[in-house]
Amino acid sequence: MLTQLLITQWWDELTTVHQVFWGIALVFTILFIIQFIMSLIGLDYDSDIEIGGDTLEADVDLDHSFQIFSLRSVIAFFSFFGWIGIFVLGKSEQVWIAVILATLGGLVAMVTVAYLMYLMTKLEEEGNIHIQNAIDEAGEVYLTIPESNSGRGKIHVNIQGSLKEVDAVTNGKEIPTGSKIKVVEIINKNTVLVESIQIG
Image 1: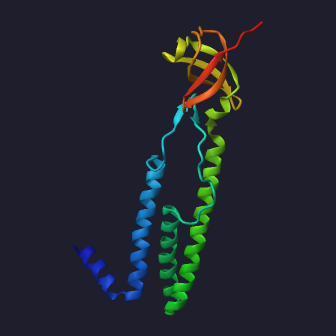
Image 2 (image 1 turned 120 degrees about the vertical axis):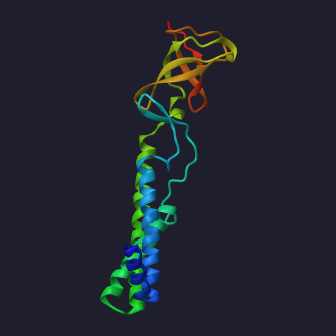
Image 3 (image 1 turned 45 degrees about the vertical axis):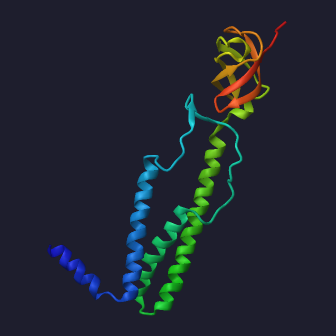
């Protein structure tokens, strides 16, 4: 009760400008912390299919361009805007100076966060194993592939320098375990169309 009274008294003693800066700083800092915690537990990331410890996904047209405006960068802007405004008002009563410096600080934070997210996206993209790169690669049947696309088998195929286990179908005859195959088409994220390779 005493704490609540002290907080209320402290808030009432602030000028309107101070209240605005404090309100922005507190709200967006809390949002920043919530978002950070969600990132740690993986709630704000799309789940991908993982095979053999690497992410395996189909090639899609994703926008990896540098984007200033995002939820993270906007939260960063207002967080820094609020705290810098509070700091400047503590040193000077010139509101216009506080607004200008807070805006500049917020913009720097916004651009910095946007750039960091861009770098992280590029690193994530480079680390992904794209099944599209399996086309024309030779492999070996691990589980027999039924004939005429009547079921799925499994193959081992080299994708981007890593041996991966992938579901496979064929339009031809049954391809038994141990047979050599070639990937001719991508069906979906983890299924390919193959054809048998005659050796010798």
